[in-house]
Amino acid sequence: MRQYTRLLTLLALLAGFPADPAQAAELRKLSLKSGDIDVPVEVAVPDGRGPFPPVLFIHAKRGYDEAERRHVMELAAQGYLVVAPDWQSGRMIERWPAEHDPDTEKDVEVALDYLLALPEACRIPAGIVALSRGPYYAIRLAAKRGPDLAAIASYYGHMQNPNAPEPDQLFRVAPEVMQITTPMLFLIGEQDFELRRMNGGRAFYALWERGVPVEYQVYPMARRAFDFRADQTPEEKIATRHARQRVDQWLRFWMRPDAAGHCR
View 1 (cartoon, helix red, strand yellow):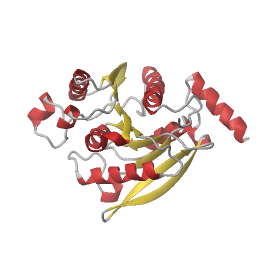
View 2 (cartoon, helix red, strand yellow):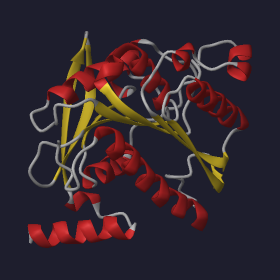
View 3 (spheres, one colour):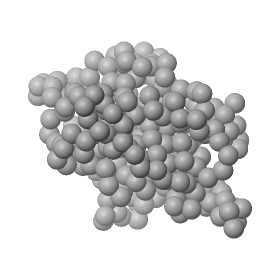
């Protein structure tokens, strides 16, 4: 039965359709200490024999819920060992916080340390997949821990400190963009917020001019949060499938597992 399930999963991935992630990964729930805070964490372990390429998943400010969990399990179905910290619940931060709490960055970093130390993880730098507010955490980590990171995939990400004053939000990117060297893939809908598209575009040009490997994927007719909207259009459903495949290609290129997903 397990061989049959693996075959179905492989065929689904090759065909470009999402496999049932529940059949392709084990989900563990635990908590990590970050100072005095207990940080809820979910770990998705691929089916099969490891070690596996490690990926840190950083959720959006809307909170960690079933949509994020499904995304994490989809990454595990692609062969990645995924650690997803809930940087809000441990500190009792309500969904959709306007301000950024710098202390939550410690909670995300603790999860990165845990990921890299897992026995199932390849002894290579980790990839990051991050959504919305999550990519701001990613660039902060990349500025601090660059050698520990292989690549970043940013879904419609913040490229400025949410606490920065309005002129910085409108006309500048975060200073970390001018420091990092981690390869970065941007994914964003054509109809996302104008400010988000502007900041992402500026970050793309800033990285490219410094010689940092970077790509910028825009999805026509796709709106804000195109990949998990409850009212997804047919075009947004296709964009989601494309984005999942594109992120997989990006991570594999920079993390360099072999064709079977094993560590080199």
